[in-house]
Every structure is written in C-alpha cells, then in structure tokens.
Length: 395
Image 1 (cartoon, rainbow, N blue to C red):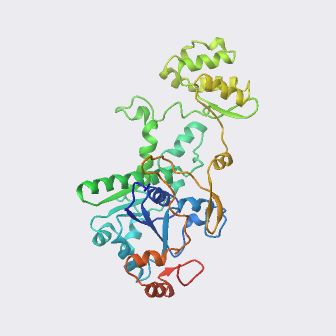
Image 2: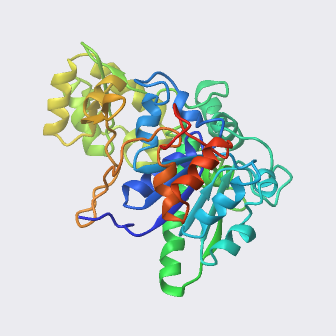
Image 3: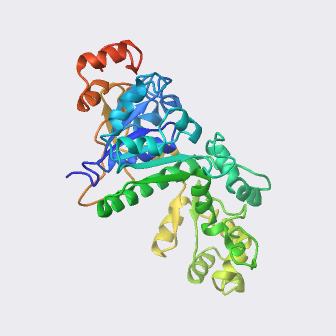
C-alpha cells in the first residue's frame, strides 16, 4: 500500500533536528524527499556515536526515507542545479535564516519563479517581522525564550531546560501539519503558498495550552502557570523495589488508593473532593500517594492499579524503550534500532521507504531525473559543485 503522500516531491534544505524530523515524517508518509546537504555536511550525522563515520544513531532515523545530493550552494553553478530541482518539487522546506535565504537567492519569490504553485516552508527561530528575525537559535535558546525554563523555575526554584529537544521537535511537527494543510489547500484551489514556522511561535502556542491558566482571562483571574504541573512533588514515586508513576485522577481512585494504603483517615477528605480541590492541593496529594506507594513492590502496585483502573506505569528507561523498537539492517552501517512512526494509518501506512543515505549518495540518480547527463554530473563533481562521500565519481 502506498503512503498518503505518494506522488508529492519535497525539496529539503534543512539541518540538525527540527527540519530533518519534519521531512523524515513527510518521507515516511510516502513523499519523495530530496535532501540537499551542504558542503560542510549534515550536523546530525555527528550527534553522538554511531556505526558509521557519517551515520550517528540519531541520523540513522532522522535521514531515512530520503534521497541525498550534496551541493555547494555558494558555488556559481550550485544555484542553477538547485533551481532545476526546485522546478520539479511540490514542497520546499528550509530552516535557513532569512538573511541566508536572501544571500543564496532562495527566497519565496525566487523559488516560486521556478515552481509557481510551490508550498514554501521556512522555519527558524524568530518571526521575520521582528528585530530578531536573523538571530541564531537552537533548542536551548527557544526553551528559554518561550517559558519552558521559567516553568521549571516555578517548580524547582531555578530556571532549567527540559532534557529533550522539545522546541526542535514541536516546531518539526508544526512544519508537518502546516505543509499538509497547504497541500490540501492547493489540491482544492491550485494555489501554492508561503509558510513561516517561527520556533518561538510554535513553542509559545505549545506552552500556553495549560500554562496560560488564569493569565489568559483579561483582567487575569489568577497567575499564569498550571498549578498541578508546577509542583516539585509531581514526579515518579519509589516503591519497595523500584520506581513507578501512579496518578489517581478522580475522587473514587483516591479513595481506593488511600484505603489500600491504610489511610482511612483521608477517606472523603475535602482536599480531593473535586477537580478544583485536587489542583489546589496537588502538593499534599502527591506527598500522600508517595508515602503509600513505598509499602509494596512495583509489580504489586501495577496489578492493583490495573484492577482498579488507576492510571499507572513503571518508569521505563531509555534502554528499555530502545529495546522495544525493531531491528533493521542498514546496507552500510549494519543493524540498528528503527524508531517506529508515530501514527498508524490503516489504508496508507507510514513506513521508511529508504535507509539513511550518505552525503551525495543520490547525486546521479536525482540529477538525471531533471535532465543532467552522467558526464554533466561528473563534471559538477570534479569542479566541486557536487560532493560525494568517499568518491569523486558517481554516487
């Protein structure tokens, strides 16, 4: 069964995590993704250890479902190669800053000249209509700029960053749904369009879902920040032999857990009588639950919670999470853990259509599709317009 985006071609000029994650998802959905890698190489190829010098554990999954050409866009002939490719692509995704796009002559107007109905998506740190439009931005910067670090301060007493690339990945998902919406619009109208995904805007929308709280009302009816989330008491709990996370979410569930833990004195307590009370008394309730859970083993509590429909899970390690992913074989890197796609589509399943490529692996294949001969491509390689890992010849 073909993916939902079969027949859609995506030109990918992105790097690190945000953009490559978005185009990986589009590729898993069936799009033909052509990645244009810079002469310097893709940053995520070196993000941590991996089985090949050009394929880290991160890049083995981020770069899958794509073809790759390695092109020097600063070379006088590099722009012509790029534009010939752009003319054949439905979607262009980039995370270059506006100043870089202008310098390389890859603005929306210029790409639209090659492909009038193109879906052009640029994603970068800050909105183009602000004085920070060209400021460099990575996940750490965006977390601090969008309230993530401040939420941690409220919970733990000092600003902290979440130990995941949350801003990169939220922005990457935002790119995907924005591109899909634009493709749907084009299907109905025939019109392409320009999309801008500022990371700060994507993360602000993400953060304020719950943390806008009382500050959303005007005048405010309370402080910003969702109280139940902003307590240091909200954390996994110790059991007699390990760690668990149990979250009673109703009065009945608290009654059941307190009775099992020998805390009949708490049954019917007004501090968990309804949702507002439970939020206001989050610290107290988390403390009581934690004191009870240490009485039994993780397995005993999991069985108890399952029988009583109380939300619970063991604390899964990163190694255990990886062990749940299937093993696949890369033709050059050998066996690796394949991260399953996030969604299950019955009629148009998501799947990895290709293993992660090396830089320039598809130079000949891709450029021949847009009219270059083998001799033309070899000449571009010889003159440094194209690059191919480990070879000056055909890739």
